[in-house]
Length: 111
Image (cartoon, rainbow, N blue to C red; front, side):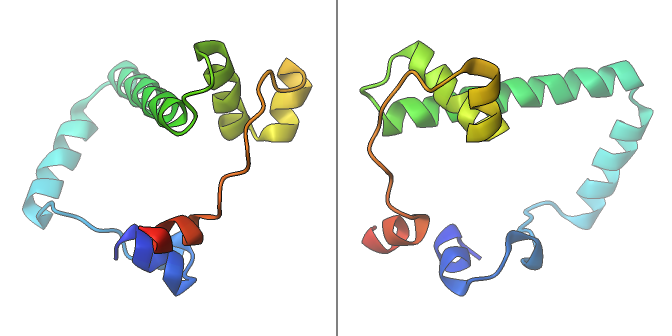
């Protein structure tokens, strides 16, 4: 199911079977490899994935809001990661001002 179909179907993400291009045999090999890794190796993998996620989120913010500088993008990232209320408690009021984005459904329909 595509992102557009998911948005239009009103299904919740946990109600949709995840897509996979990995065969059952390949998945078993991946699991065997992961099971052999130490806790430190697994933690290092999680930290690397977290860094990648933040980089991708920052890139998305910068693309959607080219008017924001790097510091403002970082603050917007914290709004997304922590939620606006907690981010404001931790970092104070936002240091940026942007117009409201249209809802996801509208953006998908406009494509």
